[in-house]
Image 1: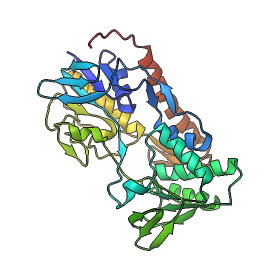
Image 2 (image 1 turned 90 degrees about the vertical axis):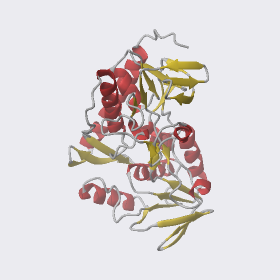
Image 3 (image 1 turned 135 degrees about the vertical axis):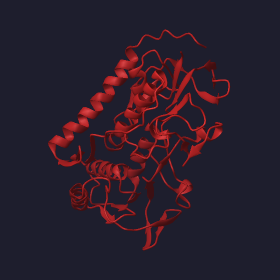
Length: 344
């Protein structure tokens, strides 16, 4: 039986590590460590790591009836298929966002944001989740290094009454305290209605800035819309066992699957393992992720949640480091597998 994984991100490499005989396809020979994109903004350090797929090719389409993957280097057949193509930021929810905001999906995006921050007088970030808070932290860190801290305005606009709403209130309050001490303006409980040029229009007034960064929701990559497969909220619609609602031998994993859980790296990795286990072993076990930790870094102030309990300081920093080490281990493990596939 041939099991193929499309996409070598968090879900894809985890699935490959679980079943090394599966075939991993990716158009890139590098792994984008998305949690480190904020470090790229702050320090300019790379968030790309060498990761060797079994097939280095771009997927152009999938013929689900014939169980055939069409790539720019030839066609690949499969018996079981795991689609783990990651995410893109959803800019459709706010009028004008597609034309006027910066987003953070790639290393190039991070470097662009870094370059723009160095020149900007006012930066507005929309969204007070993990990404928005860490981008703010990286911005303050960068401004401090180039000795511009205090000469600019940094604004965080959040729809809800508190930032990091998925974490314990203690962590939200601590994050708000630190951001306020760093000079960040917190605009809470505000709905963004439109972005017009360099102005954010809300239900409680307008805010103007040199650059606007959107840290709102995510969706599947645009490529999914080309496929003859059901989508839900622009992600692959899956059953509770992560199988496609259309094809019993096709599974969605990671941020491109319509699972109602936070799209963290940890949950994505667990979904990759779960999807390929069900696929290879012919099971229909329900996916029930068990997230252990979620940690944010605000200008080297670490805080988050571990097994439901708030954590602050060195313990949180250690947990964040351990999570990254786990990913590095999986990348190295994927690279260690001998590429014995000659299928193109």
